[in-house]
Image (cartoon, rainbow over all chains, first blue to last red; front, top):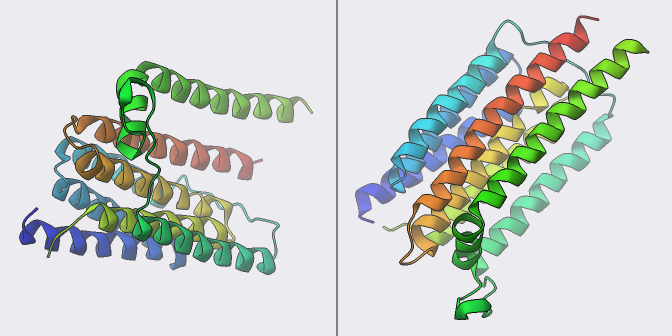
Length: 163
Length: 91
């Protein structure tokens, strides 16, 4: 990867993380929608610098759609009953999560053991196992989870209406 | 200046953490929903990065496929959540 791609990657990473902070901290929903649009642009640029052009286009369209939905007129707010202490605990937990993930990324000592066919069982091995050998099963499980979530939501609505 | 797997994973970690922070920090449940696409975006960046740098010799499309799936799922989740919040608040 040449330095132009690297500069593009780091700039678009900063743009997307800044947009994410805007989603977390800005008060109005139209500003949050605009921030999610910034995240979409940054994410698409990240994918482009990683030579994933099709994923960049799909991510741009999907995240821009999510931004429009979040900033649109159908938005209704629902207040949470959790108090400020739990919100602060959640913020600290997010910081701990960042520290853990950053430590894992910098340490970079991912598992490498030999499994069947003599392949290396690292991140590449897991990816190859999931998306080459068992791709259909992974997609089926993803579809099953999505249908289960939608069915659970629908059942909850029906039970709530008949109560 | 170069980009490696560590840089990509660090950016992915930052996106996941920002999404978790948004989901935990917002008092409005519908606004907290916007943190979930951020976490999905972080996961997608990690998948694409591993496919780009980690899967040496193999095709890069496997990670990209999952990043596409995550983007579509995040849009569906936001649309479902906003729709349910709209129905719930109108009662």
